[in-house]
Length: 456
Image (cartoon, rainbow, N blue to C red):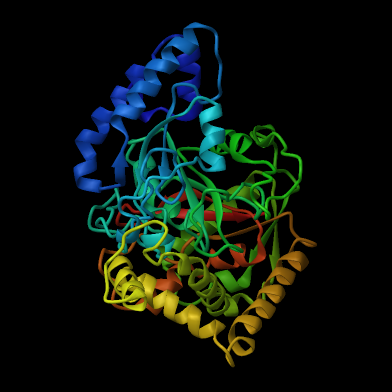
């Protein structure tokens, strides 16, 4: 048994039986990190001393009969979630040396169950990107083919899980940032319903779209993590005061008679033929298991990318205004206050962040708000209504996660619009606030993973 390949469920069983110890498991993961991290570059910060100290503590607690669900199990966390005493950079120069004085709600919930933080993973700067090429600390590589991207913005988390450098990880999803990298890296990625998981301590990109979720080796692990991180949080005004079900209770159920909606708008010209065939094969498999395919329409899908890139950039413009070199983060001195602001933001932010701040500020500016931001929110309402109507006919909706397998590094960096279209199948889910999961459903002829998206 190679310890670094274990899932959460397998590690929990082995730890409880005394077959392995937390220190053994943690050391096995660090050995794996030392072997493959130089090629993949999934981490911004590796918390070696912190993790080994937590593992030693977990060993004693297990001997004393403690049975936390994650006790002794090492997970990675995307580097846009605050971790008390461990730096949180958002892969940006402006937060390069920022060490939060508090814990995010999700990481605190993981700590309460005894998890070991093995490291903070790389992302597109401030979670703005689809390839993890926008990081101030270098790009992450896809473990299946080092010349391709791992997807984004949670590319570091997906690559770390896919290459067995952690047992599982957390990511955040604003327009597909968990599901698309999960698809590209051949792992499971779940974007929960908006409000299901607290955003307190998540560094905000677009507050009405952001949601934290698990990236795991299998669906069971996603359900286990959702049981832990879900629930109402008074520190997050958008957190839903709704009871948390046992997500693992849905595992292994018969799907006979379940209606699966197939939206015509997601099987369009331009989709990679191998992706289309893999997804259609998966649909045939669901049919063989008793599911009933139903043709549905999501007619406003074609407007989703445009609406998203107005709403998301507008909210980013507002959220990122706080990074001005005064309270925290990097500062570049200037001749006066305005000069200091301008130099700090010019030096601290990367090109993609500046592009989105400019787009968002323009959309919110006097005389343009109604034409852009307000109109985009109206379109968002229509997209949400599309889903509400579709779910009258179908229990779930099945689509490709991404129109292509992982693309080559550098292929789309000079063409932002082409890059934005990589999220065309995931963005609507965030606009509507519904949950979506990407699960592996095959490989391309180039041996790159393909993901199936199931929307609830």
